[in-house]
Length: 363
Ligand SMILES: *[C@@H]1O[C@H](CO)[C@@H](O)[C@H](O)[C@H]1NC(C)=O
Ligand SMILES: *[C@@H]1O[C@H](CO)[C@@H](O)[C@H](O)[C@H]1NC(C)=O
Ligand SMILES: *[C@@H]1O[C@H](CO)[C@@H](O)[C@H](O)[C@H]1NC(C)=O
Ligand SMILES: *[C@@H]1O[C@H](CO)[C@@H](O)[C@H](O)[C@H]1NC(C)=O
Ligand SMILES: *[C@@H]1O[C@H](CO)[C@@H](O)[C@H](O)[C@H]1NC(C)=O
Image 1 (tube, rainbow, N blue to C red):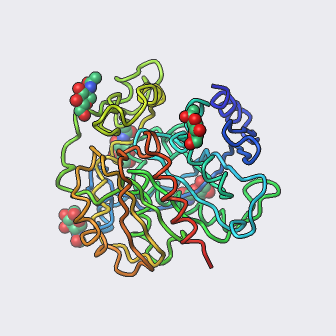
Image 2: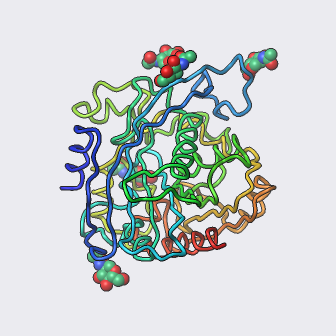
Image 3: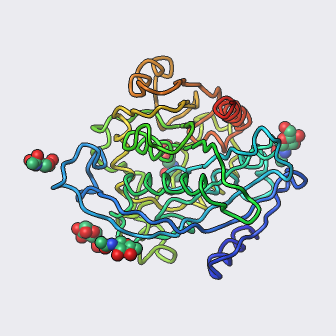
């Protein structure tokens, strides 16, 4: 996998960027990996098991986290950007135990599963990042530093950065940032929308596979998760045990085995990463009201085994949590599972994301 080797090299020499051409869109897309230092100075819960991630806490149950992290990302831009998209970018947040590779599984066989290539082919730029604690971004020694308050502060800083400075030579600052999350990545964006409300610097949110979770259902750790250091001692043996992972990823795919490639499930298992226990225990923080004012869309797979939701009842239940959103809509991606980018229905989901992107960035 030359892409991954290139990315590691990039980390070693700290400041550089790497051009990677995707097979499916060699003529139309340029991608560069980059590292952005992000400083956060925030209050986070002393108890990483706080189901609301500190959103309901008083000062005595919070502690200060003042840290600078290197955030790894892959920036993709069409070679020719249509004028209507020149000022807009999609900032992409992967789900729990995934990395930015979710948005573009990096082998040719999987090229039809690359959302970044799909978006590029339609003239749209993307920046897919690794969460702090994950992949090639900084990993705090203490997993309890990685909570939604931390990750959403990083997202907010990145969005401000994209609006005010040039992230690469010859790339102008962007005027519109659309946040797209997958699963826990949607909870991350949702958390920022609750915490910052109208100040949250995203001009629209597309929350995929991220329905509200009732905090009470998350009181225990699902048995499918284990400490990463027990899962793969050679790779993760020295990590804080509160970095966890899962090697059984079948719940992220539709129940019907003809809906996805068995090779994708193998690839997914081999490239699994870690997440902090706090990010799992705080999933229910998205059950609170967000006074965010931009447009919001939720995209849910009809065959999502991880959410087990009554998709028909969703719109009403979810929309009350977004009373000030410019618009709110729930769309069901037919046939898709939880990892809607990785099964045979990916193109349907991608078309939904791109449609919302166009709607949210139209003047
Ligand atoms: C702060 O929150 C803690 C834990 O939720 C609670 O036990 C304590 O009484 C609260 N203190 C104040 C001053 O409200
Ligand atoms: C917070 O962190 C910054 C940079 O990491 C450092 O310069 C500053 O002194 C820190 N502030 C406090 C109060 O520790
Ligand atoms: C990718 O999609 C295109 C168009 O839908 C199709 O022609 C091609 O065979 C697909 N490639 C792979 C590797 O699945
Ligand atoms: C992580 O930080 C918290 C708060 O400072 C502390 O209570 C906890 O013991 C630390 N855990 C580890 C593994 O160092
Ligand atoms: C993985 O989990 C599913 C339930 O989601 C279960 O049916 C299956 O047997 C598990 N596979 C393995 C290899 O443990």
